[in-house]
Amino acid sequence: MTASPNVTALLQAAAAGDRSAFDRAFAVLYDELGRMAHAQLRGEVDGHTLDTGALVHEAYLRLGDGDGNAWRDRSHFMAIAATAMRRVLVDHARRIGAAKRDGVMHTVAFDAVDAPTRNLHDDCLVDLDEALTRLAALDARQAQVVECRYFAGFTEEETAAALDISLRTVKRDWAKARSWLFRELEAGA
Image 1 (cartoon, rainbow, N blue to C red):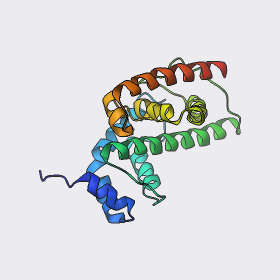
Image 2: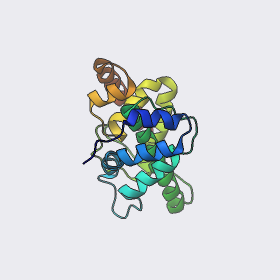
Image 3: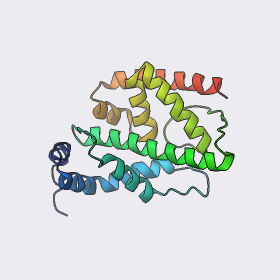
């Protein structure tokens, strides 16, 4: 196997507007993105119309729209990719929910926020997304930690690297965010 190109250099070139650099970086990271997508889709209800490949490709479209993305390195890109995948899943859940209930969303209790070994129904994913948006308004970093830990399936160490913060800060923010989200989601149940 040949040595992979410097992903950081490719991502920086992509951030400067080089579309071919973005495509090459995405190709290098494709398998890793596929594992992230698989983790996000694990445990989804039967009949889910998004598969791993579709989620990765939808994220590709969103990430490659040239909308001022300035990726520092692989970890930072993967964190942003996790956010893009979350948005794809939430948009998909909203469309499914609207079709099933003529646009009326129902709240479903969410027991705990933990690593991505969950079985979220479409309406629960929407509730989590709305709560996470409210958390981001209160503490953006905590919301980013949740995106990395929950949606990307990052370890605490990977989250620290992606967000360029200390491991201790990740642990503290993760605990606070989980507690806040649990209370928020239980209140809406």
